[in-house]
Image (cartoon, rainbow, N blue to C red; front, side):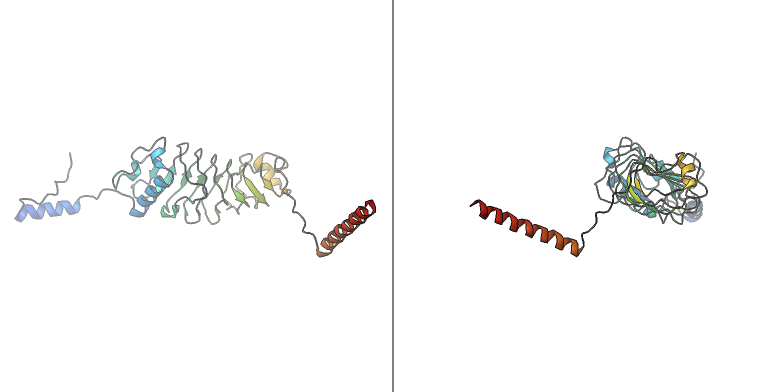
Length: 266
């Protein structure tokens, strides 16, 4: 039974009205995440074709219900979103588009979008100071990997089996696992964080620059760590001006020789 009286003021006067007003003021407000967080979730739902998700229980419910939406986790007071975990749920998007900016959820600790059909780009994660884990593996995501620089609690970065390009960003010292295999990454590997767990990371196949690193050997459980990486494509040299001149002279000589041969035949 509700310990607070119904907050209806109809037909209440005098002392009864005063008591009701006091009770209503004392009644706790229903918990709800900020409007900006609710709007992010709604935008995310529509951007990833939420109507086609495998599971979408409670999504788009009334304000105050956000923490009951499947895949959404909130803090104990249910006033901020702390996790978005909608893995293997048939999320799709438009190639080349960027997912909604999740800086609207500054309390996020976990993001898990793995095993879906996402083919766009990821927004920055730099405005998520509480982020611990990002798993976007087994999609078709494009563009650069978001940089986790400055995230003091970040320890798991899973982005394997996608189409990410560019270099692997610098990693904070707290990172224990980095799995970025089966992408289109290139360039040097970042400095290995001291927290790396032996055998829990994977960097190849990619087109990374093969450089010796005992720490990455240990972290990947492979020696050398780049054993299954393909060599970066060699740059095609651009001919110099003198080389172009030689080519033109050769072509000219060949043309003159051909004409002379044709005249002799006639």
